[in-house]
Amino acid sequence: MSRIEARFRKLRDEGRAAFIPFVMAGDPGFDTSLDLVRALPGAGADLIELGVCFTDPMADGPAIQLAGQRAIAAGQTLRRTLDLVRAFREGDAETPIVLMGYYNPFYAYGVERFLRDAAEAGVDGLIVVDLPPEEDAELCLPARGAGLDFVRLATPTTDDARLPDVIRNTSGFVYYVSVAGVTGGATGAQGAVADAVTRLREASGLPVAVGFGVRDEERAAQVARDADAVVVGSALVDSLARALPDGDEAAKTAVLGLASRLSRAIRTARQE
Image (cartoon, rainbow, N blue to C red; front, side, top):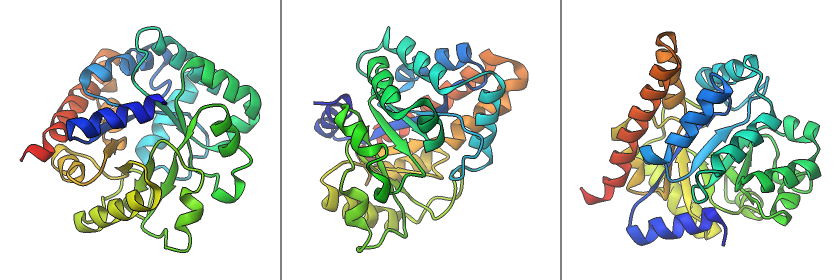
């Protein structure tokens, strides 16, 4: 059983949704980023989505684009992202780590070498935004063969004709993008999100995580009542950016404080 599957089974038994924070690997620098990722489970993270910086992140809004630029300026690379995961695993063998990125860095690294190194480092899954199901032979199927989950995105425009292709080789969980737009935008209406979660769960047999536009505790709790997981990215990255003028420690404190509040809201959402 993969770490991702084990974690979702545990949370299902507990009767609550998972909290999945997104942070950009290497933002604002390697050491601070590693400290932050190491501290996220203590702040309530059930899984961690770790961004792989890229120069042309077409699915991301301004906050995550800027985070990627800060990471690149600080010298972050895919190799150093794997180093970060490897260092995280020295103290945490249980929290699942999912890399989120675009195909170019993985292709440039070399798919076979990347999958070997990622599995060795302790990566559990991949989200690759710009690889559609028609290109599963490029990375999805090799990743599954290497023991890594491949998480696919579904959107409000994923209709019944397209859905079977989207979920065919998906594993770990399905990521529902609740708006037709980039990260950091408004979240879809709650009723529509609940209907989408039910549809995707029944079609795939997998847990469904909801992200894009969840920015505060109230909205996180609303989503957590229906979804199997809540993903928060831009709000956390924004909090880091706002606090950075006061130094890296202030930035870490800001992110971890918000993460703790979001986690608390998600954990208690179904008790209300």
